[in-house]
Amino acid sequence: MTAFRLPATTPGARLLGLGSTQPANVVTNDDLAKTMDTSDQWIRDRVGIQSRRVVGDGTLLVEMAAEAGERALKDSGLELSEIDTVIFASCTMPSPIPNGAAQTADRIGISAPAAFDLNAACAGFSYGVGTAAGLIRSGSARHVLVIGAEKLSDWIDWTDRSTAIIFADGAGAAVLGPAPDEASVGVGPVAWGSAGDLAPTIFIKPENNALFQEGQSVFRWATTKIAPVALRAIELAGLTPADIDVFVPHQANLRIVEAIAKKLRKSGAREDMRVADDIILSGNTSSASIPLALDHMRADGRVASGDTVLLVGFGAGLSYAGQVITFP
Ligand code: UT7
Image (cartoon, rainbow, N blue to C red; front, top):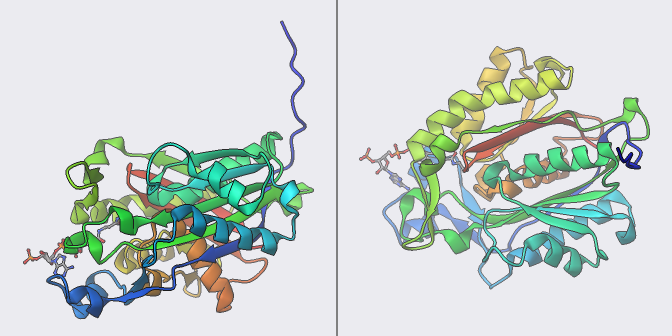
């Protein structure tokens, strides 16, 4: 038997930096109501969105990804040369080849990192963080840049009021690295899974290359199946719901966010747990929504260093993933 030399393992991973970006172009509900049969009131009541950001000037998905990545890197204080792996979570690349990770790394100026794309749709960022933490713990990677980036506007039928009012563009990123000891590990085990039998509830229609979703089916699934995933992530980390300071679920619909938070509170989460509501001004940006929400909450002082933060992503696949992190 050949005995392989394996890399030294580490106690686990922690977050070192965070960054995000959104297009400058703001699209209000009233703007959409000019071209389709909808209203500001309906969208606020049923989805919670007031406005969203949509690329209006031809900006590429990888440009947004690189900008978010650069900001996260700057925030981490690391040198470009210290990043050895780039994970690009997205479901809106213009084509499957080439991947987004290598292009984005090149734009940032990271030399020859391991670079791969990960498509878990709206669960992509949590899948990416889970994958990065595993690579770091096993010694296969040291510093990983995880980017969640989407240009959903390329994949929307702008006459379809059931999708056009929800989805938006943006990018968010985090840098993860090894924790020096057990006590400073800042990423809990990932609770993840899928429900492939429900794949037909969200897909890109080949006839028009536009996103289709059975809104009510996905709504029901999200409001019944995702709170248990969040509770599992808490349990895997050896914590209780009362330990959670901040809850950042995927920003799918404000009513879904509130329904999951209500279930967590019934299971012991605190009333003063801060809950992300970034969908109000950002819309649903799929894999970018969690890092965008986190970055915006940091900017307005609703998440701070040392906070215990619960992340949970869910969406097309259907796929889901959650973990508890310590905010850097
Ligand atoms: O992030 C990926 C995962 N995706 C999700 O989590 C999305 C989950 N689903 C949802 O968020 C919601 O189901 C939607 C926001 C997509 C739709 O909200 P809803 O409360 O489930 O509305 P609905 O589809 O049941 O439609 C209710 C009514 C219908 O009219 P009738 O049949 O009652 O006369 C729709 O035709 O509202 C109508 N409607 C609209 N009216 C004005 C549907 N879309 C619109 C609209 N403006 N944009």
